[in-house]
Length: 132
Image (cartoon, rainbow, N blue to C red; front, side):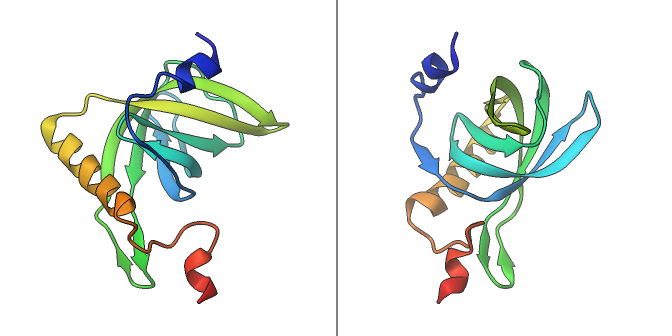
């Protein structure tokens, strides 16, 4: 399946959102803070300075910065790399599908996305919240 085919299969509302998340690859020991491009109930797209193999298992930590001294609880989810494309030399876009979401994780992730859906004024990577 091509990257474009996969992108067109989405069944969940996708939010274009630049935010930092924690990324861990248990198999390789990789740990990094990465920037998302978008996020949905089904998965996440993020940028990284290295390629990650398809089907690689990931652990992701998502939290919203609600203000200067306020953050949401961290939502930890498991994922699997479903596509990886080199956007520029040394810059990779990676798509990961969330896996093994039990009912509690689904509720936590849906609540997290509801904050975004409601337009909560969160501080994003671009620094938009600092422009006031």
